[in-house]
Structures are given as C-alpha cells and as structure tokens.
Length: 151
Image (cartoon, rainbow, N blue to C red; front, side, top):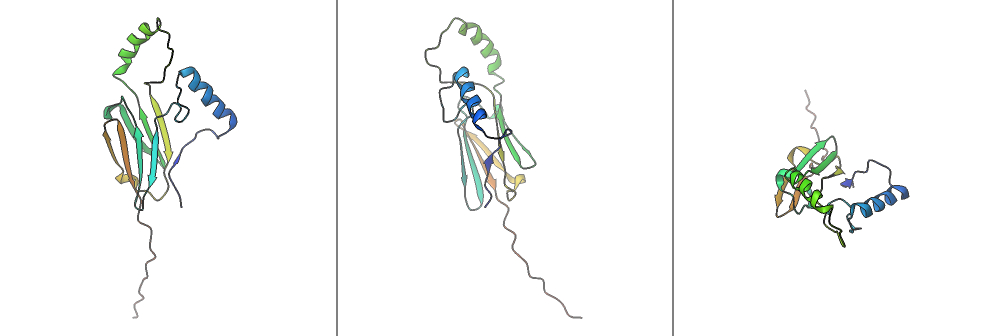
C-alpha cells in the first residue's frame, strides 16, 4: 500500500535535525512538535486521503496549493501583514521578549502523492483557520475479461 508522505528535499540525518532545532531556537519558536511548519494531520480512508492543516492568522487568500507531477505543495505568504510587520519591527527593537511562542511568517510544505490519487479532483476548503483537502483515490483497476467472437 502506498501512502501520502512528507517530501524532504534533503536526506534525513542527524545534522539536518540539529540544524532544524538550532534554527527554531533562534527564530523563537518553542514548539518542538511542529517546528516552523503548521501542524498537519493526514488520514487515509477507503476512497480518499484527507489533509487538515492548522493555519491560524491566515486567510484563504494567503494560501496557495500547487501540484507538480506527484508533489503537492501548500504555501502561505501573509501579504497584508508585510507593512504591519515593518512597523512592528521598529517597535520591537525596543522590546525584549521573555517568552515568544507565536510566529507569523511564510511557510511551504510539500507532500509526495501516491500514484493512485486523482490529482484532477482534489477538493480544498478553508474555515476558521483550518485548511482541509480531500484527495480522492483512483478506483483500482479490475482485470476485464474480453470475450472472443467466432467467425
């Protein structure tokens, strides 16, 4: 059985994991579970795969979903917050955070789709900060018997 998996553009290894931990420390993210990416649940049902992605603070217009071959990429850029962020950066120069757990930034997540999905009929919805995707599976090919006609 083939399943939907997270795409890694680098081989998994100890040094890559150490880089991720160090990067999350300097960025200020204290959540070791999700790192700098939003939390994602992937479920497999008989006829579909389902993805649920937590995106608090984003709107549906901030999110982009693309498919290239068998790679599903979900990304978000908070365009409307760029000006606000510049103003906040000037104010934050004077601030010293004691605890900083919230991050608002862009992200990109890529997943490898199994061959048996119907890429043309993926359904996406966004409600209350939760992006949900329903990825239908292609019906399994059933051998077909061909009748031979006598002449």
